[in-house]
Image 1 (cartoon, rainbow, N blue to C red):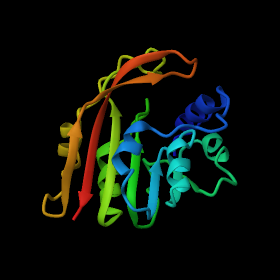
Image 2: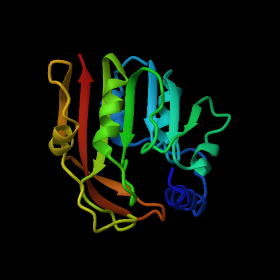
Image 3: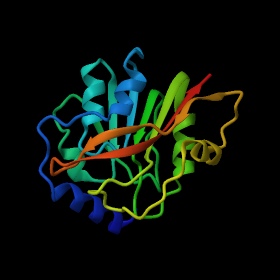
Length: 196
């Protein structure tokens, strides 16, 4: 565990008010809108918009984050919360969906190892959804970073294609709204993997 990472992310969430009804990420809603509910794992749940959206649709959700501030905001909302520093541990269990939106950090993290563990935690037919920044919004904490494209991420995970298949790997654009209400056009890198 890195105290610096915990302090950074606790400070990030403590510095802004908790939204009363956090919105889900649009790439999640489009990717799994017609998927029957099951067990879902939300890696780096943040404000909890994705976890709450899934739970309202009948998913049994486990939400994880390195920030206890973020997790406390989901207390008593029908979601199981688990604290994890993904550099040291991965949540136990099997899942029908693993959701990983914007799992970026200024601290060392072997994302390929995390996503490989996530793929192995899928039940047969399960989905791994990885959404990364493809561009930096004006309000981003790290506007100088270069984020790998979805095919680069898939190559780094290096999954056996006889067991896992890439169902989507593209970089669509959308208009995003920042914490201050301003909007900007951003690009997402979207990778959707299914376990056979």
